Image: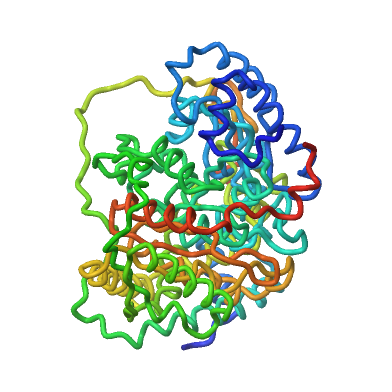
Amino acid sequence: MTFADKTAAQMQELIHTEKTTIAEVTKQAFDRIEALEPKVDAFLAMNKEQAMQQAEEMDKVPLAERGPLFGLPIGVKDNIVTEGLETTASSRILEGFNPIYNATVVEKLKAAGMITVGKLNMDEFAMGSSNENSYYKKTKNPWNLETVPGGSSGGSAAAVAAGEVPFTLGSDTGGSIRQPASFCGVVGMKPTYGRVSRFGLIAFASSLDQIGPVTRTVKDNALLLQAISGHDERDSTSADIEVPNFAEALTGDIQGLRIGVPKEYFAEGVSEAAKQAVRDALQVLEEKGATWEEISLPHSKYALATYYLLASSEASSNLSRFDGIRYGYRTQKAGNLLEFYMNTRSEGFGDEVKRRIMLGTYALSSGYYEAYYKKAQKVRTLIKQDFDKAFENYDVIIGPTTPTPAFKIGEIIDDPLTMYANDILTIPVNLAGVPAISVPCGFENGLPLGLQIIGKYFDEETVYRVADVFEQATDFHKKTPQTWEGAAQ
Amino acid sequence: MAKMTKEEVIEVAHLARLAITDEEAVHFADQLEAITNAMELLNELDTENVEPTTHVLEMVNVLREDKSVPGLDRELVLKNVKEHEAGQVKVPTILE
Protein backbone atom coordinates (compact mmCIF):
# COMPACT_ATOMS: atom_id res chain seq x y z
CA MET A 1 0.00 0.00 0.00
CA THR A 2 1.27 3.47 -0.83
CA PHE A 3 0.35 6.55 1.15
CA ALA A 4 1.63 8.95 -1.49
CA ASP A 5 -1.74 9.33 -3.20
CA LYS A 6 -3.82 9.51 0.01
CA THR A 7 -5.48 12.53 1.57
CA ALA A 8 -5.23 13.31 5.28
CA ALA A 9 -8.72 11.86 5.85
CA GLN A 10 -7.86 8.64 4.00
CA MET A 11 -4.65 8.20 5.98
CA GLN A 12 -6.44 8.79 9.28
CA GLU A 13 -9.02 6.19 8.24
CA LEU A 14 -6.24 3.65 7.64
CA ILE A 15 -4.58 4.49 10.96
CA HIS A 16 -7.81 4.50 12.96
CA THR A 17 -8.89 1.11 11.54
CA GLU A 18 -5.43 -0.31 12.34
CA LYS A 19 -4.59 -1.03 8.71
CA THR A 20 -1.41 0.93 9.32
CA THR A 21 0.40 2.88 12.05
CA ILE A 22 1.90 6.33 12.33
CA ALA A 23 5.33 4.67 12.51
CA GLU A 24 4.67 2.86 9.23
CA VAL A 25 3.43 6.01 7.48
CA THR A 26 6.52 7.86 8.69
CA LYS A 27 8.89 5.12 7.61
CA GLN A 28 7.30 4.97 4.20
CA ALA A 29 7.73 8.71 3.77
CA PHE A 30 11.47 8.32 4.42
CA ASP A 31 11.72 5.28 2.11
CA ARG A 32 10.08 7.21 -0.67
CA ILE A 33 12.23 10.28 -0.03
CA GLU A 34 15.37 8.14 -0.14
CA ALA A 35 14.25 6.51 -3.39
CA LEU A 36 13.35 9.77 -5.12
CA GLU A 37 15.88 12.30 -3.80
CA PRO A 38 18.63 11.33 -6.27
CA LYS A 39 16.25 12.60 -8.98
CA VAL A 40 14.24 15.35 -7.30
CA ASP A 41 16.72 16.92 -4.81
CA ALA A 42 13.98 18.64 -2.80
CA PHE A 43 15.32 18.11 0.72
CA LEU A 44 18.20 19.56 2.72
CA ALA A 45 18.59 18.52 6.40
CA MET A 46 16.66 15.38 7.36
CA ASN A 47 15.10 14.64 10.74
CA LYS A 48 14.82 10.86 10.43
CA GLU A 49 15.89 9.58 13.81
CA GLN A 50 13.80 12.01 15.79
CA ALA A 51 10.81 11.66 13.48
CA MET A 52 10.76 7.87 13.80
CA GLN A 53 11.02 8.13 17.56
CA GLN A 54 8.22 10.71 17.64
CA ALA A 55 6.04 8.49 15.42
CA GLU A 56 6.32 5.55 17.79
CA GLU A 57 5.36 7.73 20.74
CA MET A 58 2.39 9.10 18.83
CA ASP A 59 1.01 5.67 18.05
CA LYS A 60 0.34 5.37 21.79
CA VAL A 61 -1.87 8.46 21.96
CA PRO A 62 -5.60 7.60 22.31
CA LEU A 63 -7.62 8.12 19.11
CA ALA A 64 -9.99 10.54 20.84
CA GLU A 65 -7.10 12.95 21.45
CA ARG A 66 -6.02 13.13 17.79
CA GLY A 67 -6.85 15.87 15.31
CA PRO A 68 -7.14 15.54 11.49
CA LEU A 69 -3.39 15.97 10.90
CA PHE A 70 -2.15 13.95 13.86
CA GLY A 71 0.86 11.78 13.08
CA LEU A 72 1.14 12.85 9.42
CA PRO A 73 4.51 13.78 7.88
CA ILE A 74 5.39 17.31 6.79
CA GLY A 75 8.40 19.05 5.21
CA VAL A 76 9.32 22.61 6.16
CA LYS A 77 10.90 25.24 3.91
CA ASP A 78 14.44 25.97 4.99
CA ASN A 79 13.83 29.63 5.86
CA ILE A 80 11.62 28.57 8.79
CA VAL A 81 13.69 27.93 11.91
CA THR A 82 13.53 24.48 13.52
CA GLU A 83 15.15 23.93 16.90
CA GLY A 84 18.13 21.61 16.64
CA LEU A 85 17.60 20.98 12.91
CA GLU A 86 19.98 22.80 10.56
CA THR A 87 18.33 25.83 8.94
CA THR A 88 20.18 27.61 6.13
CA ALA A 89 17.63 29.43 3.91
CA SER A 90 19.71 27.66 1.22
CA SER A 91 22.53 30.14 1.83
CA ARG A 92 26.19 29.47 2.49
CA ILE A 93 26.11 32.23 5.09
CA LEU A 94 23.93 30.03 7.34
CA GLU A 95 25.77 26.77 6.71
CA GLY A 96 25.68 24.69 9.88
CA PHE A 97 23.28 27.05 11.67
CA ASN A 98 21.39 25.19 14.36
CA PRO A 99 18.45 27.26 15.62
CA ILE A 100 17.90 27.43 19.37
CA TYR A 101 14.14 27.87 19.08
CA ASN A 102 11.23 26.91 16.82
CA ALA A 103 9.27 29.27 14.58
CA THR A 104 5.70 29.74 15.82
CA VAL A 105 4.39 27.70 12.87
CA VAL A 106 6.68 24.81 13.82
CA GLU A 107 5.35 24.90 17.38
CA LYS A 108 1.85 24.84 15.90
CA LEU A 109 2.68 21.83 13.71
CA LYS A 110 3.87 20.07 16.84
CA ALA A 111 0.67 20.96 18.66
CA ALA A 112 -1.33 19.49 15.75
CA GLY A 113 0.74 16.30 16.10
CA MET A 114 2.49 16.59 12.74
CA ILE A 115 5.90 15.03 12.25
CA THR A 116 8.61 17.16 10.63
CA VAL A 117 10.62 14.89 8.33
CA GLY A 118 13.07 17.46 6.99
CA LYS A 119 13.87 20.85 5.53
CA LEU A 120 13.16 21.86 1.95
CA ASN A 121 15.42 23.45 -0.63
CA MET A 122 14.64 26.96 -1.88
CA ASP A 123 16.17 29.90 -3.68
CA GLU A 124 18.69 31.54 -1.34
CA PHE A 125 16.79 33.72 1.16
CA ALA A 126 13.66 33.14 -0.97
CA MET A 127 15.06 35.29 -3.77
CA GLY A 128 14.34 33.56 -7.05
CA SER A 129 11.76 31.79 -9.17
CA SER A 130 13.54 28.56 -10.10
CA ASN A 131 15.45 27.13 -7.09
CA GLU A 132 18.62 27.64 -9.12
CA ASN A 133 19.77 30.21 -6.54
CA SER A 134 20.22 27.61 -3.79
CA TYR A 135 23.84 27.29 -2.61
CA TYR A 136 23.32 23.57 -1.96
CA LYS A 137 21.41 21.92 -4.82
CA LYS A 138 19.06 22.43 -7.73
CA THR A 139 15.64 20.92 -7.13
CA LYS A 140 14.06 19.39 -10.25
CA ASN A 141 10.46 19.47 -11.37
CA PRO A 142 9.01 15.96 -10.83
CA TRP A 143 7.03 16.31 -14.08
CA ASN A 144 10.16 16.77 -16.16
CA LEU A 145 13.54 16.55 -14.48
CA GLU A 146 15.11 18.95 -16.98
CA THR A 147 12.81 21.78 -15.90
CA VAL A 148 12.78 23.91 -12.78
CA PRO A 149 10.23 23.37 -9.98
CA GLY A 150 9.73 27.14 -9.68
CA GLY A 151 10.65 29.15 -6.65
CA SER A 152 11.40 30.19 -4.20
CA SER A 153 9.47 27.36 -2.43
CA GLY A 154 10.55 24.91 -5.18
CA GLY A 155 11.50 22.15 -2.73
CA SER A 156 8.15 22.49 -0.97
CA ALA A 157 6.19 22.10 -4.22
CA ALA A 158 8.39 19.37 -5.75
CA ALA A 159 8.30 17.21 -2.60
CA VAL A 160 4.49 17.20 -2.63
CA ALA A 161 4.29 16.65 -6.41
CA ALA A 162 6.63 13.66 -6.19
CA GLY A 163 4.61 12.20 -3.31
CA GLU A 164 7.59 12.37 -0.95
CA VAL A 165 5.40 14.05 1.69
CA PRO A 166 1.71 15.00 1.58
CA PHE A 167 2.23 18.36 3.30
CA THR A 168 4.84 21.11 3.21
CA LEU A 169 5.16 24.69 4.35
CA GLY A 170 6.43 27.37 2.00
CA SER A 171 6.69 31.14 2.14
CA ASP A 172 5.41 33.66 -0.38
CA THR A 173 6.82 37.18 -0.80
CA GLY A 174 6.02 37.76 -4.48
CA GLY A 175 4.61 34.41 -5.60
CA SER A 176 7.02 31.99 -3.94
CA ILE A 177 4.30 29.50 -2.96
CA ARG A 178 1.87 29.92 -5.87
CA GLN A 179 4.38 29.94 -8.75
CA PRO A 180 6.09 26.64 -7.76
CA ALA A 181 2.69 25.11 -6.90
CA SER A 182 1.59 26.01 -10.42
CA PHE A 183 4.80 24.63 -12.00
CA CYS A 184 4.54 21.37 -10.03
CA GLY A 185 0.77 20.80 -10.31
CA VAL A 186 -0.05 21.07 -6.59
CA VAL A 187 -2.16 23.31 -4.37
CA GLY A 188 -0.40 26.31 -2.79
CA MET A 189 -1.96 29.04 -0.65
CA LYS A 190 -0.62 32.45 0.26
CA PRO A 191 -2.82 33.53 3.17
CA THR A 192 -3.79 37.13 3.93
CA TYR A 193 -0.83 39.12 5.25
CA GLY A 194 -1.02 38.77 9.03
CA ARG A 195 -3.00 35.50 9.08
CA VAL A 196 0.05 33.40 9.96
CA SER A 197 2.79 34.41 12.39
CA ARG A 198 6.15 35.24 10.82
CA PHE A 199 8.04 34.67 14.07
CA GLY A 200 10.93 32.40 13.13
CA LEU A 201 10.60 32.99 9.39
CA ILE A 202 13.97 34.31 8.23
CA ALA A 203 12.92 37.73 6.98
CA PHE A 204 13.26 38.70 3.32
CA ALA A 205 10.72 41.54 2.88
CA SER A 206 8.81 41.90 6.12
CA SER A 207 5.83 43.82 4.72
CA LEU A 208 5.22 41.11 2.08
CA ASP A 209 6.39 37.75 3.51
CA GLN A 210 3.76 35.22 4.50
CA ILE A 211 4.02 31.50 5.35
CA GLY A 212 1.52 29.14 3.72
CA PRO A 213 0.67 25.48 3.02
CA VAL A 214 1.42 23.31 -0.04
CA THR A 215 -0.62 20.10 -0.51
CA ARG A 216 -2.13 17.84 -3.15
CA THR A 217 -5.76 18.71 -2.41
CA VAL A 218 -7.68 21.82 -1.41
CA LYS A 219 -9.20 20.17 1.67
CA ASP A 220 -5.79 19.18 3.01
CA ASN A 221 -4.56 22.69 2.34
CA ALA A 222 -7.42 24.13 4.40
CA LEU A 223 -6.63 21.73 7.25
CA LEU A 224 -2.98 22.75 7.29
CA LEU A 225 -3.71 26.49 7.16
CA GLN A 226 -6.08 25.94 10.08
CA ALA A 227 -3.24 24.42 12.08
CA ILE A 228 -0.76 27.27 11.51
CA SER A 229 -3.04 30.35 11.61
CA GLY A 230 -3.67 32.77 14.42
CA HIS A 231 -2.46 35.79 16.33
CA ASP A 232 0.99 35.60 17.89
CA GLU A 233 2.26 38.17 20.34
CA ARG A 234 5.80 37.49 19.12
CA ASP A 235 4.92 38.90 15.67
CA SER A 236 3.58 42.44 16.00
CA THR A 237 2.27 42.29 12.41
CA SER A 238 0.19 39.15 12.98
CA ALA A 239 -3.49 40.04 12.94
CA ASP A 240 -5.56 39.71 16.09
CA ILE A 241 -8.57 38.35 14.25
CA GLU A 242 -10.62 35.20 14.70
CA VAL A 243 -9.61 32.17 12.62
CA PRO A 244 -12.66 30.57 10.96
CA ASN A 245 -12.99 26.84 10.31
CA PHE A 246 -11.59 26.64 6.78
CA ALA A 247 -12.55 23.02 6.12
CA GLU A 248 -16.18 23.81 7.01
CA ALA A 249 -16.15 26.50 4.33
CA LEU A 250 -15.91 23.78 1.66
CA THR A 251 -19.65 23.51 1.15
CA GLY A 252 -19.53 22.81 -2.58
CA ASP A 253 -21.94 25.69 -3.12
CA ILE A 254 -20.86 28.66 -5.25
CA GLN A 255 -24.33 29.60 -6.51
CA GLY A 256 -24.37 33.35 -7.20
CA LEU A 257 -20.59 33.78 -6.78
CA ARG A 258 -19.33 36.86 -8.65
CA ILE A 259 -15.94 36.44 -10.34
CA GLY A 260 -13.82 39.29 -11.71
CA VAL A 261 -11.34 38.39 -14.45
CA PRO A 262 -8.68 41.08 -14.93
CA LYS A 263 -7.89 41.72 -18.59
CA GLU A 264 -4.33 42.64 -17.57
CA TYR A 265 -3.76 38.99 -16.56
CA PHE A 266 -4.29 37.93 -20.17
CA ALA A 267 -1.74 40.33 -21.61
CA GLU A 268 1.20 39.72 -23.90
CA GLY A 269 3.61 37.14 -22.52
CA VAL A 270 0.89 34.88 -21.13
CA SER A 271 0.82 31.65 -23.14
CA GLU A 272 -2.24 30.72 -25.15
CA ALA A 273 -2.52 27.43 -23.25
CA ALA A 274 -2.48 29.23 -19.89
CA LYS A 275 -5.22 31.61 -21.08
CA GLN A 276 -7.32 28.76 -22.44
CA ALA A 277 -6.96 26.74 -19.23
CA VAL A 278 -8.38 29.70 -17.27
CA ARG A 279 -11.25 30.18 -19.75
CA ASP A 280 -12.09 26.47 -19.39
CA ALA A 281 -11.97 26.80 -15.61
CA LEU A 282 -14.34 29.78 -15.72
CA GLN A 283 -16.77 27.66 -17.70
CA VAL A 284 -16.60 24.93 -15.06
CA LEU A 285 -17.35 27.49 -12.34
CA GLU A 286 -20.16 28.98 -14.43
CA GLU A 287 -21.78 25.57 -14.68
CA LYS A 288 -21.67 25.43 -10.88
CA GLY A 289 -23.63 28.66 -10.57
CA ALA A 290 -20.99 31.42 -10.63
CA THR A 291 -20.96 34.39 -12.99
CA TRP A 292 -17.89 36.17 -14.32
CA GLU A 293 -17.07 39.47 -15.96
CA GLU A 294 -13.94 41.03 -17.36
CA ILE A 295 -12.55 43.71 -15.06
CA SER A 296 -9.51 45.96 -14.99
CA LEU A 297 -6.76 46.23 -12.37
CA PRO A 298 -5.21 49.20 -14.17
CA HIS A 299 -1.99 49.44 -12.16
CA SER A 300 -0.98 45.80 -12.67
CA LYS A 301 1.83 46.67 -15.07
CA TYR A 302 3.55 48.74 -12.37
CA ALA A 303 3.53 45.92 -9.82
CA LEU A 304 6.81 44.29 -10.87
CA ALA A 305 8.89 47.48 -10.59
CA THR A 306 7.16 48.43 -7.33
CA TYR A 307 7.81 45.02 -5.88
CA TYR A 308 11.50 44.86 -6.77
CA LEU A 309 12.14 48.27 -5.26
CA LEU A 310 10.25 47.57 -2.02
CA ALA A 311 11.30 43.95 -1.56
CA SER A 312 14.96 44.69 -2.30
CA SER A 313 14.95 47.70 0.03
CA GLU A 314 13.49 45.67 2.87
CA ALA A 315 15.91 42.83 2.10
CA SER A 316 18.95 45.09 2.20
CA SER A 317 17.95 46.06 5.72
CA ASN A 318 16.88 42.58 6.90
CA LEU A 319 20.01 40.89 5.56
CA SER A 320 22.35 43.32 7.26
CA ARG A 321 22.15 41.05 10.32
CA PHE A 322 24.26 38.40 8.60
CA ASP A 323 27.75 39.45 9.61
CA GLY A 324 29.39 36.19 10.70
CA ILE A 325 29.74 37.26 14.33
CA ARG A 326 27.15 35.32 16.32
CA TYR A 327 26.17 32.55 13.93
CA GLY A 328 26.68 31.27 10.42
CA TYR A 329 29.59 31.41 8.02
CA ARG A 330 32.78 33.24 9.01
CA THR A 331 35.50 34.31 6.61
CA GLN A 332 39.04 33.15 7.27
CA LYS A 333 40.52 36.16 5.49
CA ALA A 334 40.28 39.33 7.56
CA GLY A 335 42.83 41.65 9.12
CA ASN A 336 40.30 43.91 10.78
CA LEU A 337 36.60 44.06 11.57
CA LEU A 338 35.50 45.87 8.40
CA GLU A 339 37.28 43.34 6.20
CA PHE A 340 35.72 40.61 8.31
CA TYR A 341 32.20 41.89 7.59
CA MET A 342 32.83 42.48 3.91
CA ASN A 343 34.57 39.18 3.20
CA THR A 344 32.10 37.14 5.26
CA ARG A 345 29.16 38.62 3.37
CA SER A 346 30.81 38.39 -0.07
CA GLU A 347 31.80 34.78 0.42
CA GLY A 348 28.52 33.90 2.14
CA PHE A 349 25.92 35.41 -0.20
CA GLY A 350 25.20 34.32 -3.78
CA ASP A 351 24.93 36.66 -6.77
CA GLU A 352 21.16 37.20 -6.79
CA VAL A 353 21.18 38.06 -3.09
CA LYS A 354 24.05 40.51 -3.61
CA ARG A 355 22.23 42.06 -6.57
CA ARG A 356 19.11 42.67 -4.49
CA ILE A 357 21.01 43.94 -1.46
CA MET A 358 22.77 46.44 -3.72
CA LEU A 359 19.55 47.46 -5.49
CA GLY A 360 17.89 47.98 -2.11
CA THR A 361 20.84 49.86 -0.67
CA TYR A 362 20.84 52.09 -3.75
CA ALA A 363 17.06 52.70 -3.59
CA LEU A 364 17.32 53.68 0.08
CA SER A 365 20.46 55.78 -0.24
CA SER A 366 20.41 59.52 0.16
CA GLY A 367 19.37 61.26 -3.05
CA TYR A 368 17.43 58.25 -4.37
CA TYR A 369 15.06 57.52 -1.49
CA GLU A 370 12.25 59.79 -2.75
CA ALA A 371 12.65 58.80 -6.39
CA TYR A 372 12.68 55.05 -5.83
CA TYR A 373 11.60 53.81 -2.41
CA LYS A 374 8.96 56.39 -1.58
CA LYS A 375 7.65 56.42 -5.14
CA ALA A 376 7.22 52.63 -4.99
CA GLN A 377 5.36 52.89 -1.66
CA LYS A 378 2.93 55.33 -3.28
CA VAL A 379 2.37 53.11 -6.31
CA ARG A 380 1.75 50.27 -3.86
CA THR A 381 -1.21 52.29 -2.57
CA LEU A 382 -2.61 52.52 -6.12
CA ILE A 383 -2.22 48.77 -6.65
CA LYS A 384 -3.96 48.05 -3.34
CA GLN A 385 -6.79 50.42 -4.32
CA ASP A 386 -7.28 48.47 -7.58
CA PHE A 387 -8.09 45.40 -5.50
CA ASP A 388 -10.23 47.31 -3.00
CA LYS A 389 -12.36 48.66 -5.85
CA ALA A 390 -12.68 45.29 -7.60
CA PHE A 391 -13.76 43.59 -4.38
CA GLU A 392 -16.65 46.03 -3.99
CA ASN A 393 -18.35 44.17 -6.85
CA TYR A 394 -16.75 40.73 -6.96
CA ASP A 395 -16.20 37.91 -4.47
CA VAL A 396 -13.02 36.55 -6.04
CA ILE A 397 -10.61 37.51 -8.82
CA ILE A 398 -9.41 34.74 -11.11
CA GLY A 399 -6.56 34.48 -13.61
CA PRO A 400 -3.52 32.34 -14.45
CA THR A 401 -0.91 31.88 -11.69
CA THR A 402 2.04 32.17 -14.08
CA PRO A 403 2.40 33.30 -17.70
CA THR A 404 3.91 29.97 -18.80
CA PRO A 405 4.57 26.46 -17.44
CA ALA A 406 7.98 25.53 -15.98
CA PHE A 407 11.05 26.45 -18.03
CA LYS A 408 14.29 24.53 -18.53
CA ILE A 409 17.03 24.59 -15.90
CA GLY A 410 19.69 27.13 -16.94
CA GLU A 411 17.45 28.75 -19.55
CA ILE A 412 17.03 32.23 -18.01
CA ILE A 413 19.25 32.22 -14.93
CA ASP A 414 21.58 34.86 -16.42
CA ASP A 415 18.77 37.27 -17.26
CA PRO A 416 17.36 38.74 -14.02
CA LEU A 417 14.59 40.79 -15.67
CA THR A 418 13.17 37.81 -17.58
CA MET A 419 13.36 35.74 -14.40
CA TYR A 420 11.51 38.46 -12.45
CA ALA A 421 8.71 38.49 -15.07
CA ASN A 422 7.69 35.00 -13.90
CA ASP A 423 6.02 36.59 -10.91
CA ILE A 424 4.12 39.26 -12.81
CA LEU A 425 0.70 37.73 -12.00
CA THR A 426 1.42 36.85 -8.38
CA ILE A 427 3.24 39.97 -7.17
CA PRO A 428 0.21 42.34 -7.11
CA VAL A 429 -1.42 40.05 -4.54
CA ASN A 430 1.50 40.42 -2.11
CA LEU A 431 1.58 44.18 -2.57
CA ALA A 432 -2.13 44.34 -1.70
CA GLY A 433 -1.81 41.75 1.09
CA VAL A 434 -4.87 39.72 0.05
CA PRO A 435 -5.01 35.88 0.03
CA ALA A 436 -4.61 33.77 -3.14
CA ILE A 437 -4.35 30.10 -4.02
CA SER A 438 -2.97 28.23 -7.02
CA VAL A 439 -4.71 24.99 -8.04
CA PRO A 440 -3.85 22.72 -11.00
CA CYS A 441 -5.97 23.58 -14.06
CA GLY A 442 -4.33 22.11 -17.14
CA PHE A 443 -1.15 21.16 -18.98
CA GLU A 444 1.09 22.58 -21.66
CA ASN A 445 3.64 20.22 -23.23
CA GLY A 446 3.11 17.80 -20.36
CA LEU A 447 3.82 20.44 -17.71
CA PRO A 448 1.17 21.66 -15.23
CA LEU A 449 -0.58 25.04 -15.34
CA GLY A 450 -2.12 26.79 -12.35
CA LEU A 451 -5.35 28.67 -11.74
CA GLN A 452 -5.00 31.59 -9.37
CA ILE A 453 -8.00 32.47 -7.17
CA ILE A 454 -7.61 35.75 -5.26
CA GLY A 455 -9.88 36.68 -2.34
CA LYS A 456 -10.75 39.56 -0.06
CA TYR A 457 -8.75 40.32 3.09
CA PHE A 458 -9.13 37.44 5.56
CA ASP A 459 -11.61 35.67 3.28
CA GLU A 460 -9.60 32.50 2.70
CA GLU A 461 -12.92 30.67 3.19
CA THR A 462 -14.35 31.82 -0.15
CA VAL A 463 -11.03 31.17 -1.90
CA TYR A 464 -10.99 27.60 -0.58
CA ARG A 465 -14.68 27.06 -1.41
CA VAL A 466 -14.16 28.06 -5.04
CA ALA A 467 -10.92 26.07 -5.33
CA ASP A 468 -12.62 23.00 -3.89
CA VAL A 469 -15.59 23.23 -6.28
CA PHE A 470 -13.17 23.46 -9.20
CA GLU A 471 -11.08 20.55 -7.91
CA GLN A 472 -14.12 18.33 -7.37
CA ALA A 473 -15.34 19.04 -10.91
CA THR A 474 -11.99 18.26 -12.57
CA ASP A 475 -9.29 15.60 -12.29
CA PHE A 476 -6.08 17.61 -12.73
CA HIS A 477 -5.14 16.99 -9.09
CA LYS A 478 -5.28 13.23 -9.65
CA LYS A 479 -2.64 13.25 -12.38
CA THR A 480 0.80 12.18 -11.25
CA PRO A 481 4.25 13.05 -12.65
CA GLN A 482 6.78 10.66 -14.23
CA THR A 483 8.85 10.38 -11.05
CA TRP A 484 5.80 8.99 -9.25
CA GLU A 485 6.16 5.56 -10.86
CA GLY A 486 9.89 5.44 -10.27
CA ALA A 487 9.54 5.44 -6.50
CA ALA A 488 9.59 2.42 -4.24
CA GLN A 489 6.01 1.27 -3.54
CA MET B 1 18.09 57.52 -16.39
CA ALA B 2 21.70 58.18 -15.65
CA LYS B 3 24.17 55.47 -16.41
CA MET B 4 25.21 53.28 -13.51
CA THR B 5 28.99 53.45 -13.24
CA LYS B 6 31.43 50.96 -11.85
CA GLU B 7 32.39 53.51 -9.18
CA GLU B 8 28.77 53.89 -8.06
CA VAL B 9 28.42 50.13 -7.71
CA ILE B 10 31.59 49.94 -5.63
CA GLU B 11 30.24 52.72 -3.40
CA VAL B 12 26.87 50.96 -2.96
CA ALA B 13 28.63 47.65 -2.31
CA HIS B 14 30.70 49.32 0.37
CA LEU B 15 27.58 50.74 2.04
CA ALA B 16 26.11 47.23 1.97
CA ARG B 17 29.36 45.75 3.37
CA LEU B 18 30.00 43.61 0.32
CA ALA B 19 33.52 43.19 -1.06
CA ILE B 20 33.39 43.03 -4.84
CA THR B 21 36.11 42.86 -7.47
CA ASP B 22 36.41 45.39 -10.31
CA GLU B 23 35.24 42.73 -12.72
CA GLU B 24 32.13 42.02 -10.62
CA ALA B 25 31.45 45.74 -10.31
CA VAL B 26 31.33 46.09 -14.10
CA HIS B 27 28.99 43.11 -14.37
CA PHE B 28 26.69 44.34 -11.60
CA ALA B 29 26.71 47.88 -13.06
CA ASP B 30 25.22 46.58 -16.30
CA GLN B 31 22.60 44.50 -14.53
CA LEU B 32 21.63 47.14 -11.98
CA GLU B 33 21.37 49.72 -14.73
CA ALA B 34 18.97 47.50 -16.67
CA ILE B 35 16.94 46.88 -13.52
CA THR B 36 16.76 50.52 -12.40
CA ASN B 37 15.84 51.51 -15.97
CA ALA B 38 12.92 49.10 -15.81
CA MET B 39 11.90 50.72 -12.51
CA GLU B 40 11.66 54.11 -14.26
CA LEU B 41 8.26 52.93 -15.51
CA LEU B 42 6.80 54.17 -12.23
CA ASN B 43 7.54 57.77 -13.25
CA GLU B 44 4.63 57.57 -15.70
CA LEU B 45 2.31 57.81 -12.71
CA ASP B 46 1.38 61.03 -10.97
CA THR B 47 1.58 60.17 -7.27
CA GLU B 48 1.66 63.73 -5.98
CA ASN B 49 -1.43 63.24 -3.77
CA VAL B 50 -1.06 59.53 -3.01
CA GLU B 51 -0.22 58.39 0.50
CA PRO B 52 2.60 55.80 0.69
CA THR B 53 1.73 52.29 1.96
CA THR B 54 4.18 50.84 4.46
CA HIS B 55 1.92 48.05 5.68
CA VAL B 56 -1.35 46.78 4.21
CA LEU B 57 -3.10 46.26 7.55
CA GLU B 58 -3.90 48.92 10.12
CA MET B 59 -1.00 48.65 12.50
CA VAL B 60 -1.26 49.49 16.17
CA ASN B 61 1.67 50.01 18.45
CA VAL B 62 2.19 46.96 20.65
CA LEU B 63 3.31 47.75 24.16
CA ARG B 64 3.96 45.53 27.12
CA GLU B 65 4.50 46.17 30.78
CA ASP B 66 8.02 47.34 31.56
CA LYS B 67 8.96 44.28 33.53
CA SER B 68 12.22 42.37 33.44
CA VAL B 69 12.14 38.78 32.21
CA PRO B 70 14.98 36.28 32.06
CA GLY B 71 17.00 36.37 28.81
CA LEU B 72 18.33 33.40 26.88
CA ASP B 73 20.70 30.97 28.49
CA ARG B 74 24.30 31.97 27.71
CA GLU B 75 25.30 28.49 26.58
CA LEU B 76 22.44 28.48 24.08
CA VAL B 77 23.34 31.94 22.83
CA LEU B 78 26.92 30.83 22.20
CA LYS B 79 25.87 27.57 20.53
CA ASN B 80 26.23 28.92 17.00
CA VAL B 81 29.19 31.22 17.61
CA LYS B 82 32.22 29.98 15.67
CA GLU B 83 34.83 31.37 18.08
CA HIS B 84 34.24 32.33 21.69
CA GLU B 85 36.20 32.45 24.92
CA ALA B 86 35.10 32.81 28.54
CA GLY B 87 31.52 33.47 27.52
CA GLN B 88 32.48 36.14 25.01
CA VAL B 89 32.35 36.29 21.23
CA LYS B 90 35.74 36.61 19.52
CA VAL B 91 36.14 39.01 16.61
CA PRO B 92 39.16 40.43 14.73
CA THR B 93 40.92 43.59 15.92
CA ILE B 94 38.59 46.58 16.18
CA LEU B 95 41.19 49.25 17.04
CA GLU B 96 44.39 49.43 15.05
